[in-house]
Length: 284
Length: 92
Image 1 (spheres, rainbow over the protein chains, first blue to last red):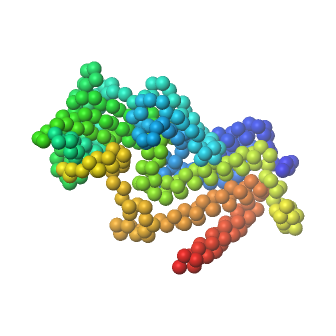
Image 2: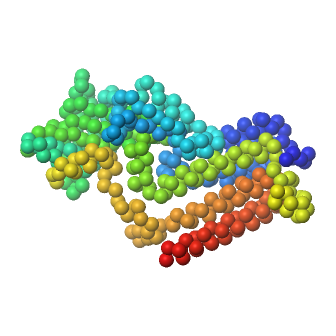
Image 3: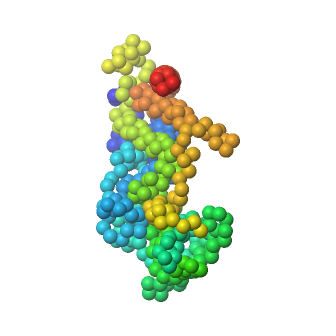
């Protein structure tokens, strides 16, 4: 509703600014109280969602690996498919705070973003499973954590050392020798998957380490992820992840109303109409 | 090292997550001596935020916005409390 007392200035510019940053359009129009309400409420709701979901409720695409077996998309070098996340259609209206997801989608789909070998030296904290195979085919699986040092690589072989402890607190020291596969550089999970062959010891012929090392923040924040990672989030954060998603969706939807307010003014009027008029308009 | 082929399959499927702590999937009020936030509590600031933004898009006068937002906030809380109470009685 237009009112001569409300300075809408250039309505299109105000709407674009309101989209880019909640409250910015109203600040441009000189409507400071509303700018404070919109930026304070919408941005705090969005940030609360991000904090509750440990930075991970915003992503534009979900990655699917074809085939009946669900293998991690991080390590899958073949064809993958993606679909848009429905929640992102709401989140995107928060503007700039949610737009990195589109940049990450572009980075994710770049041909260079594939699982690969170790390019340089790796020295990172590692957590995962050690799977050893004995001569009779029996498999032993233990959860380990420690430090993984990899490099140099010659051909298909990478040398390295894992030193850490198993779930029982016993020291584990293993030599990495063989192929090492690192997960995609850009992927929506803070842990970058690693699969590497390790030398046998004692009655074990050999085995492999399956686990994760850290991934740079700029490589996982708002990036596409697969259902395996979403399952992990639900397992670790439980209902908190769902609540976090709801917060970010609502923040985006609230900004749709704020954008329209910057473009066309308040829906019911200035607010100084008589209560009788106000009641009628509200009922309508 | 514990040996199990079944465990091997499980490990290959679960990757880095390790065993899921089922306590994370419960709705305990206390865990390890710490007060956990019941999920319903998150609805309070969210409702306040929704009320303020909604009413700010209806009116221009700050007093009118705040007054109508508080009324809307109270109505939402009362409505949620009524539904919460009803569901509690039904699940007794």
